[in-house]
Length: 66
Image 1 (spheres, rainbow, N blue to C red):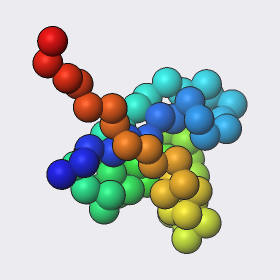
Image 2: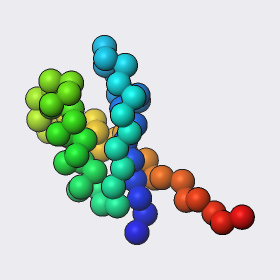
Image 3: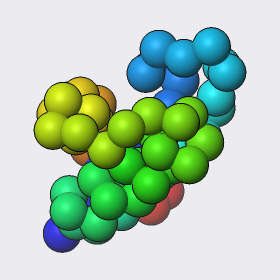
Image 4: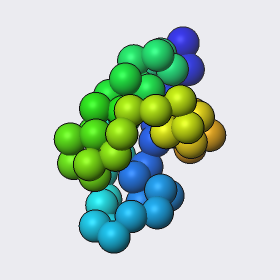
């Protein structure tokens, strides 16, 4: 399974938030990111917010053994 993350620094905000959230499933990541956006950034849980957060999802680089 490919781990994904959302880096809050890539979403425009006045808070200059530096939180990064990661999860193994897109569903889990989206739910955690929505909870963060609503509770910390006082966003509304809307389809537009969820679409914006989905667009911020990136694949987490895989660490390779030396």
